[in-house]
Amino acid sequence: MKWVIEARNLWFSYTKRKNVLKDVNIRAVSGKITVIVGATGSGKTTLLFLLSGLLEPDKGIVYYNDKPLREILEDVKKHIGVLFQDPNDQLFNSTVYDEIAYSLRTLELNEEEIEEKVVRTARFLGIEDILGEKPYELSMGEKKKVALASIMVYDPDILFLDEPLANLDYNNSLLLEEIISEYRKLGKNIIVSTHNLEFALRIGDIIYGLVDGLVIGPFTPLEIVEKGFKNIGLPEPLIYKLCRKLGLEPKDIVELIRKI
Amino acid sequence: MKQLSQKYLEYLREAFTYLSSDKGRIFSPYSSIPLIILVFTISISHNVTTYVLGITFTICMLITAYSSSKNYNRVDMASVVKSSLMIVLIVFIISMPLIFLRKFEPAYMFITRVLAASLTFMILSQIIGWWNIIRGLELIKTPRIVTEMIYQTIKFIPLFITETLKLIAAREARILCRKNISSIWRALSSIVGDIIIKSYYRSTMFNMALNARTLSNKRIMIWKRVKPTLYDISLIIFTALILLLEVAARI
Image (tube, rainbow over all chains, first blue to last red; front, top):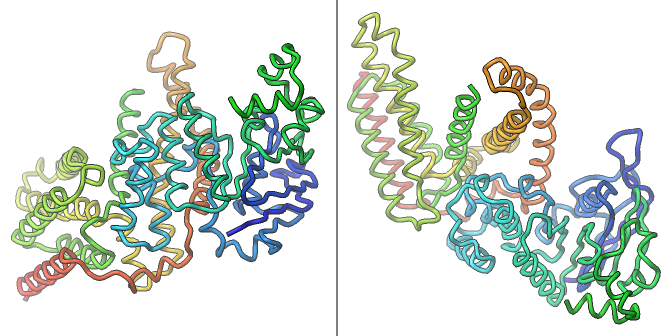
């Protein structure tokens, strides 16, 4: 199913003193990767939580296919997968198996079906050996994989990935990027938040900048490279600097970054 | 002192993790009510035969569950033994006054009864699975809000203990002077405020994680699809037998 997610005039604050998000407008469509880039504390996580219905905005509305999310949340929940930045916040079951099986159990599938799906997902992510372990005893990278498996197992159409590369080593980062690309090919709606501009340029189709609660964009990766990085509040990535030194054109820089 | 408090918290976390397990491979939600009746009957019984039968049945179920499950979904025997030893230790400590007062008969009855009831509950609840127990409560029309609260509380405690352990470790790492009892005490006593704040944050995130990962709002309908398993039926029959035995003993 195709999904168009739109945030219109979103305002949000945790305390009365400061607005975390100010009049945010964002649009994300299926088959594209929408990336929200911004420095730490710029409100990326809050924005993802608002878009996924985990938080309610003070003002403004989030629409899924032109219907207000609040009205249809219970029906669309099974299409939404949220990967938290810190897997410790996401994991709460007693074993890895239970952790991955949790969402399927809430869908009332039978245990045989659940087991088959859990084992298949765990095998794909290379965590089948730790299915019997307690989540709090795992390394951070393993926890992240378990959190990812707990989403992948029910195959949602809409994915919210909050700093997906955080706590992952190089190989696992590559694996995750591959998974994200595969999901794009399958026509899923993927919204990623990150402070890693290089990663944003590499995977993003549409990029929004978030600076002090204000959204800038949308941009394509080429537009970001052409217009410079200063207006989205992040420093130029190392690879970009290198490419400029080599005298490459913006179009070639984007192509190179995406190929790498 | 630090190690003692940490060890205690770690054991407590393990116990709650063990209790809140969702393995539930051989039983279905139908086992939840017989389990409660069985444990209740054992705990009010004065009949040693009831205790022995209860423990024997529990051990048989444990072995069956262990041998019929795959390694990732298997009952953790080490946890069973550890928790059982903890229960034995606690029961003996509590019954010490009776032993010192040389009231051996009441002490014997107290120890056997508490051991039988708590071991039966602990081991069977692990095999049945916390998820099945909660759904079983929903079968008898326990309000959803109550079952959700029980479920979330049991799930939240290990998270909270993990957070506390991290806070203790962080404080410990920042004690730069020689680690004597007074310096450790000073560092750890100020932890209470942090724990309150952290528990608020942790519970907010836990609530969000539950919301994000609970995909259906109709968990209560599960009983329409599930059929009682052979093990459910054996537990129901055994509970009925124990109940009859107890009634007969009382008459």
